[in-house]
Image 1 (cartoon, rainbow, N blue to C red):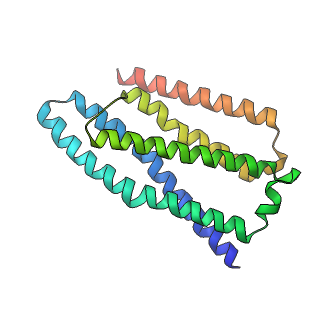
Image 2: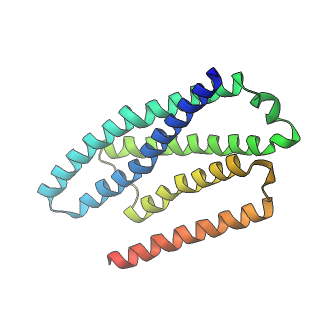
Length: 181
C-alpha cells in the first residue's frame, strides 16, 4: 500500500516538473523577444521575466526534479522494478530509464540557458528556443508511450511514430513562424 502512495506522489511531482520544463522555455522566448522592444519596455519586461523565471525554476522546477528522482528511486527500490529492469519483459523499462536520463540532461541545458539569461546573455534566437522547447514534448511522449504500451510496443512503429511526431512538431513551429511574420 505504501508503494502506491509513493507512486502517486512520484507521478504528481513528474507532472509539476514537466509544467516547469514546459513553461521555462516559453519565458526564455519572451525574454529574448523583449530585446526587440524599446529600451524602456525591454528593461521592464526583462525584469519581470527574470522574477518569473527565478520563481518557476527554483520554486517549482528544481524541487520537482529532485523529488521526482528521489521518489522514482524509492518506487523502484520498494517495487518489483529492479528485477524487471534487466529481464526480457522489462526492456521497455530500461529504455524508459534512458529517456528519463535524457530528460535530466535536458533539464540541465535549461539551467544553463537560465543562468545565461539571468546574466543578460541571449545566445539563442526565439525560433531556436521554440524548437528546443519541443524536446521536452518528444521526451514526454516517448516516456508515456513506453509506460502505457510496455513490451507490446512494436519498435518499428514506435520509431516511425516518433519521427512522424517530430516532423509534425517542426512543421507546426515553421507554420507559426510564418503566421507571425
